[in-house]
Structure formats: structure tokens, C-alpha cells
Amino acid sequence: MNNDENARSEQPEGGASAAPDASAPPPAAEVSGRQRLKAGLWPPRLSRAQLIVAVLLFGLGLGLAIQVRSTSDDSALRGARQEDLVRILDEVDDRTQRLEDEKQRLDDQRTELENSSDQAEEARKQTLEKERQLGILAGTVAAQGPGITLTITDPSGAVAPDMLLDAIQELRAAGAEAIQVNGVRVVANTYFSGDAGDVEVDGKKIEAPYEFTVIGKPQDLEPALNIPGGVVQTLEKEQATVLVERSDEIVVDALRPAQRPDYARSSSP
Picture: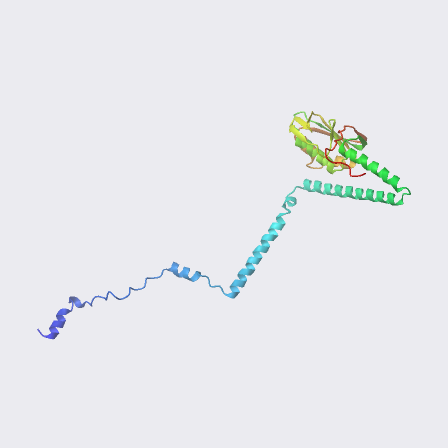
């Protein structure tokens, strides 16, 4: 056998090629579409223009959030009923008028002191008048003047202490200067307790009908109770009967004992 025949005999049958070299690197794995998308999105490649636009959009969103927050502060008034808005407006007007009256009174007192020939005597008179006014507020002296009488009849026993307290607050807001309820003088620290039909004022039990004797301007006190959604309507929803009567002469004579301070002493000689 010659050399050509030996070479042909070494080749595999069927013309198959030689086996691949085991040391050659494996072919690269096929990259999926999701991997290409992820590679394109991260890490982000932002241009300068895109960065500026992002900052502007963030600032715009922050401004809108602040605007919405500031607007929501007035949501209580925006969602209030017309009757509530009317009541709030009336209370503001009444308080403004009372402050104007108090300012005028103080201006008149100052003028009297400046023009009085005997300033010491004038100062003494004003001090006594101030003492009388403070005594009325503290409930240590009786008072009389124009005002109203508020009578609440509660046949079903449904009038709760907080309803009576609402009446006191409305009267005070309308300028009431002296109040007593069923013979109990109402002062700054007066409180109502108990349950419906079993009401106490400053720890003293009172029974229906509840009679409020109030000194103040009748033309201010009565409308404050009768405003839409106010005290009268609230009580009538509980089947209570409410009667408001004006009078030119109301007497508030229930007294509070003057409390002697334990530690405070006058600093005047």
C-alpha cells in the first residue's frame, strides 16, 4: 500500500471533518430582548437638557403641592353651611362692635382724667366703678339692667348639659354681662355636668324648666339664640320648648362668695 492509500484510509468514512479542538472558546450566548432593554435603561444616561427638564418638573410639582396644602387650610369654611357662615359673620361683627365700644369708653375716661380739676377724685370714682364692674363679672355683687329671660322646657328629659353650655357661650359671645341659671350665678369658671334630664351647674343640681336670666343688649342677645342652626333650633330638635322674652329691667341677684387668695397680697402700701 502506497502513501496515498494510507492517507485515504486515515480519513473517516462519509467525508466527515475532523472533531473540533476542545481548547477553542465556546460561542457567545444569545442576548434576550429583555436584557437588551435593561442594558439600554440602566445605568441612565441623562443629557444636560434632560436633567434641567427633570429639575423644573420637580419644582413645579412641589409648588402645586404647597398650593394645595395652603388651599386646604380654608376647607373648614369652604365646606360650612350657609347658616354657619352667617352665624360666624354675626359673631365677628358683634365682637368688633364691642371692642369699639370698649375703646370709646376708655378714651372717654382718659379725657375725663385729663380735663378734671381734681384728678385724684376722678381717679377714685373710676376705680370704684371698675371695682363694681369686676364684682359683676366675678358674681360677687348683684346687677340689674336690660336683657332677656330664656326659658327651656324639657318634657322628654333630652336636654343635655352641653346644650345648656352652648346657650351660655352664645349669650357671652353676644355680649351678655351677667347670667344666672335657676338661681346659680354663671362666672368664668362655671361648668355643666351630668346627663340629659339630670343636669348640674358647678356641682348644684338643677331641674327643668331651665331659666336663664341674662343682662345685656336684648337686640343682640335674642338674635344670637335664634340664628339658623343655633341654640333654639338645636333644642327644638330634642322636643324642648324655648321661650325668649326681652325686658328693660332684668335682675341678676344670685351671688358668689368672694374668694380670699391664699398667697397673693396687695403690693400697694
